[in-house]
Length: 440
Image (cartoon, rainbow, N blue to C red):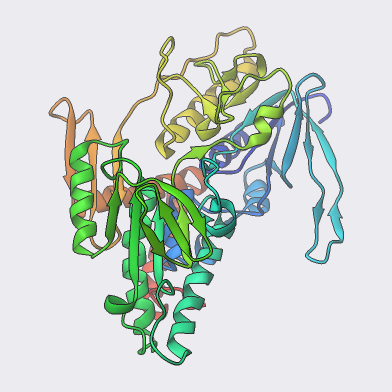
């Protein structure tokens, strides 16, 4: 194994895990290459589901995937730990030591050599250095953060149920900063989940009277990156749910008691979610001789190779990639883009190893539209390249089914269609014996 090509993939998100699985099933299985996936988590959860975990609508134990098991089944290797340094000169990545909860070192510092390095570390929330945002707001970048918010929400409702007197101002107010897809989907999911949670015997809490959801967006409309028709439809649905919308309001401070905006508004809340803006992990900017932009994304060519090192590839949210060769417009941070790029990279890496003199393909972004899921209330979106030759607005049941299909496509890439069918049947059978919301 020392003499074969080593492909190291850093980041086990949707794109990174799909790429590792495909390469493992072909190059890894045939011992043509050694494929190694590195991630700071032991399990994988599809990131678009994090708002459901935060609301308690989804139990992550039933939807998470063990990296070690996936590696065993699909002929690649998994290394647990957080990459903190890349040495492009010596072609190595360094993984921080990992520790037990009592501080005992489990795994020491490691360095792994690579021939081809793929960075797919995704993005983190961008708090724009707003005072108090890091200390008092919860982001939804990881499963741990989503579960942390759910625990805070659940505990707040339990406290209100058992305390003497009425609910205090700010105790059950939830403020969501950011009116993008994560923000609006979380607002709708919280509306549903809090009502289901209080239905399970928490009779002293009246969700219509005691629980308020605020959504604050700096732009003058929700979902500013999507077509206005989708924004208008989503805004209408959220107003029906009595979600309090503050548009064209920029948050200037977050405190333990709530938030403050540039217009002087103060909203009391002990539950603040920050879902405004993204940036790539900062360690990417610390890689020597690698070009990054102001939000730490690695600048890549249309081949997804770094502009300064042909042995380093980057894709997904952590890459600043043109939508087509020669364009100054960058690929938007969407799941569909990461999926498209992972599919192309699979072909590129195979070609790089098996046909090293062949030119690599160039990525061209294809926008198939956008879908925004408001849970059981509605799903809206637009499809690009429809039979009408442009963009087609969809909503309701059809949009909901198409949204659900996106997740099933991700699972099919990891497990195959047969496994996904049996998984769906299992969920249907067990649905009657499970609570509709996580109660712990």
